[in-house]
Length: 208
Ligand SMILES: CC(C)(COP(=O)(O)OP(=O)(O)OC[C@H]1O[C@@H](n2cnc3c(N)ncnc32)[C@H](O)[C@@H]1OP(=O)(O)O)[C@@H](O)C(=O)NCCC(=O)NCCS
Image (cartoon, rainbow, N blue to C red; front, side):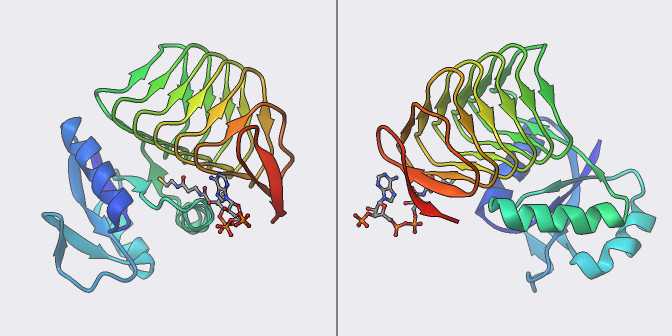
């Protein structure tokens, strides 16, 4: 497979490493702001205004939007979808993903993460370094599960939510769409949509 990675930041470095570990060909990097000719040993192919030209040159390329911020990633994906690009996934070889797990297009699964049986991972989700997601979880599109998160069985994470680094979630809890869970928080009850919740137990501190 041949990939084009969108983004030339820190998150993109990790995704490039994952694709290289998988032996995938990376055609180059798309970025709206990078003025260099190359980044991380890869050619800069241009920004979003070059998308039609890139698709005519590389009609079979799979795109991965390597932007950590959920809202920005979602906007870029929706613009690329208008141009009918195809999205690929990137799963690091050290990740342990049960055969019954579904992973949607555009999602990235980082080193040493674990996803157990019958979990559903939507599109353009980030399962970051060493996160663990147990059985029967449901992770909707554009969610970011930060490094070292531990999620018990049957947890549900709503569209575009962000679970902060090192947070824990007990079995069966639900986190609403666009909600942010603070670093190292412990979610023991359902959280509504569009709030920030922090602490152990996690409590709502802001409406977004
Ligand atoms: C939760 C979070 C988003 C809040 O950021 P914010 O909206 O800018 O809020 P503030 O920093 O103003 O903090 C508001 C209050 O919550 C407290 N707070 C913030 N994060 C907290 C956390 N993780 N646990 C406990 N308390 C926290 C602050 O101390 C502050 O309390 P105070 O008003 O008594 O001083 C941020 O602190 C956080 O934890 N982000 C996680 C980022 C992350 O994991 N990124 C991973 C990228 S790979």
